[in-house]
Length: 436
Image (cartoon, rainbow, N blue to C red; front, side, top):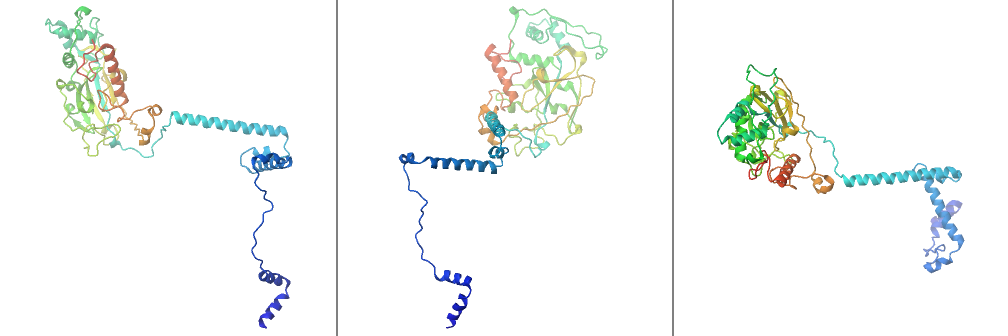
């Protein structure tokens, strides 16, 4: 009875009645029927589709296109799809959209071609390279006077048959069949004897083929030695013995003096025997390369030397003597010195890249290094696209370290060897005849 009262009280409210009736009269689950689905029709039955159905599909496509033009964020598409736009305005926007699309395709194509041809990107590094991680550049200095006057006059006046080769080399080096120019009067000293002796030109019949040892001896005794050229030297604010800093080197300018260049056994694969050049390396040397840098266990005073800081007081300071009274023939139409800064693992080419230093002047040279590093992924790019070699990909015949400069030097030597069967006297090979 108590439960029946609750049901009666609930029935007085029509809303409550409906809720209760829904809860009490829950229909059983029935399998749904989808009357709007049509049975599958094969392709052969498509011909039976009426024109009204095709119009309906076209209308749906038009509706979707209009909806896309209305909702898209692409500029200009909404004006193309609005129904009340004039047909001229529609043509304008259609042309603008087509032009933009074609331009985008062209730019993407150009960008892809640029990436395909030059996939390597050069960017500035966000981290700085310490100055002690890179070596101080090698420094080679040469006196423009190739042969000292006293030596040349002694050779020209000699009656010894053995001096025939020296006379030939002197003529080939200085062209002594023409009088050499006298040094400027402002640079000459009280020595009044400025006359020079000339020799008759050498004919093809009496030409000789000098050997490497003969050319080496001639360059050594004719050029200015380093201990006479270098009067005083200072490195990193400390006075040093110049003979411990510089070594004699044979270059395309003759006998020169080099600073901070690695020993020849670390420079060439088959170094020449240059015992007569008085080469001394009192400091240890390490196998430094531009790609690998210094070995982890390299000492700080090992060649090639590294600067301890920036500024002229921590660099190299030299006092030079060019022996103006000993000028006989100059490599240029001037007097003074030729200098060149280069890599410690490269041979200098002063005739093409050296700069002149006038005597009786004070000169300052600023060094601003540039370090370029490449990631390991660059090695996976084809050679045709990156246009460069790594040291492990290319080995030279003469040089131990592959650089662009060493490669060009070796190509010149190979070209000379292939065309005349000889090499220049400063080229790195003592098994081949010299240029005659």
